Image 1 (cartoon, rainbow, N blue to C red):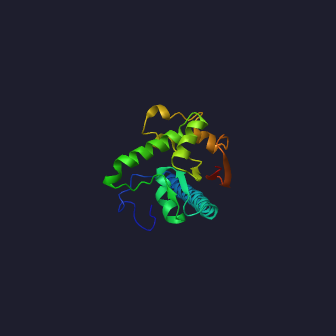
Image 2 (image 1 turned 90 degrees about the vertical axis):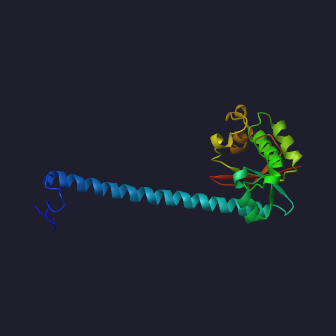
Length: 186
């Protein structure tokens, strides 16, 4: 049998027609599944990116340049660069700032994993926070590197914020499928 090229040349003479047909069908199905998955993931990523930009735009338009934003430290750089607003902590750390930044990271963890709203409120007051920038897909595992006892999802402040059930004095400025921006009422 030949497919334009003798099978012996391709060193596939051991395959019969049925096996070649099945291999071709499997290859075709694999390509279709890959393309569908690629298109789906591209759509999801584009939707997430647009939500992210919309949330940052809402933050910028609702806040003043002097306002301080509480967000995960991983979001800090983008918030500073795209909105011009200050944040409690970013991922950019200079050696001379190590002690201060460690304290700020600890305070962020204490805020997100506070069991009581009054404990979370103390962090807001300490830094004079005006806005909260919250990802609804908050990753508890990657954010729980300090202290492990704080990493209980149920009943934590971040869980209440994601569900919009916090008793802190907050107003929702922006909400999408992926983000919530709160204004702190002082």
